[in-house]
Length: 135
Image 1 (cartoon, rainbow, N blue to C red):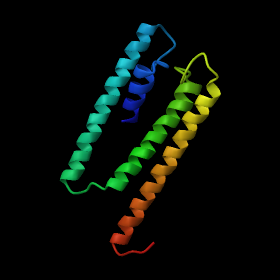
Image 2 (cartoon, helix red, strand yellow):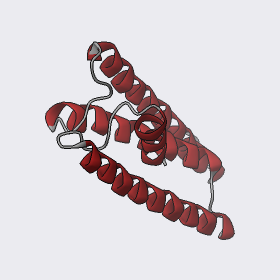
Image 3 (cartoon, rainbow, N blue to C red):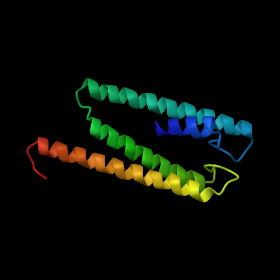
Image 4 (cartoon, rainbow, N blue to C red):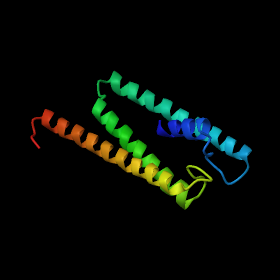
């Protein structure tokens, strides 16, 4: 879901970069289309899995939100460190001082990860206390 959001906002609406910026604009647009298709199918697949959990009565909203935040943070940190810096396939923006963008991008990723971990830990404590075991 976060990949889908990233592609729609930063690639299409703001046009700050393409998924792959080491070639022509046409190749960049093709890479965006493939990234968009992958993220769309992953989002739809995730919604089917969530619907199945709801149908079986196994859906825990706090755990779902924790997973969303943790997954969003890990994806964003991977994007910011691996794709932006190590692989260099694209940057957040071009022709500007990139340091503030990198700090905000990766800092927000860490915040999302921490929120996700806290929510998942709360869910685990709730499940243990429901079974009668006090933590």
